[in-house]
Structures are given as structure tokens and as C-alpha cells.
Image (tube, rainbow, N blue to C red):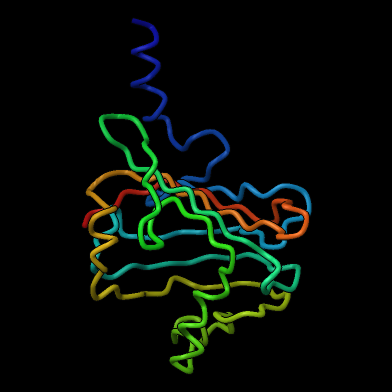
Length: 186
């Protein structure tokens, strides 16, 4: 009985241990040691996120190392089902995936010839290589006009746990980590 009471009360007390609760998202910079990317502030709203729709994002952080093709990217995506988080498998680059060349995805912006205006207006990079810089994005509205079928299959109206890590290809050392809990409605 005591365990049941604790299980019901602890979530009501606020953020998970080590996480910052902004009221719309719980997040933490989970990097260790010499992180190449560190995040000091992060927020995304509304709660729940409605996709497609308008999303407001803000963050502050630092990139302290040149980033190009020397990194890999791992995304862990879990969705809550019957009170337990279960892994969303990687399908068509959506879900829990390992990317050997994350800069490849940023080539989309090179092909278009420009970064999103919300980034360029704040001097933020969106293509590789990325040089050391301070990151600052004041609350900025991004509009998601549609989501691809793969995302529709992977996403449901529920809470998600997402953890993104950058690793050095040569040493396999963790170079950056960001973890978050948020609710999404599709």
C-alpha cells in the first residue's frame, strides 16, 4: 500500500530527479565530462505538442568543439503505454535510431540554400561543419504543416521519453547528451 501511495504522490511533486521542469517539458543535459554541446536552457510548447501545428522553442547552450563527420548520433525514443515506457523501433529514420552521419540530414538545408529564418535571425548554424559558438534561441514559433506517414505510425497521443546523444566516431566517447519527457498529440 505504501508503494502505491509513493507511486501516486512522487509524480505530483514535480520534475523527475535531475530534470528541469519548465511546465511544458522535463529535460536535462545528460552530458558528462568534456561535452562538445551543452544545453543550459530548453523549452518547447504547447503542452501537449500538437502535430501538425505551431510549436514554440527556446534554448541556450554552447558548442565547444568543431562538429562535422567525426560524430554519430543516437536517438532513444520511448512512448508510454499502459503506464510503462516502451521503445519505438527505428523505421524510415524515425524512432530509436543510430545515425552514422548526422550531418547528412542537415544537407537538406544546403539544398534549399538557407536555414530556417528563426535560426538565421539568431545566428544559429544548421549545416555542417559547425564551429564552436554560443547558442541562443529566444522563444521562436515554428510551424509544422504536416508530418510524414512514418511519424504518424510511430507517434500516438501520449507521453514520450527522448534521449539524444552525440558520440565521437573514433573513441566512441559520449560528447553530448540531451534527455526530455514531453507529451505529443497527433
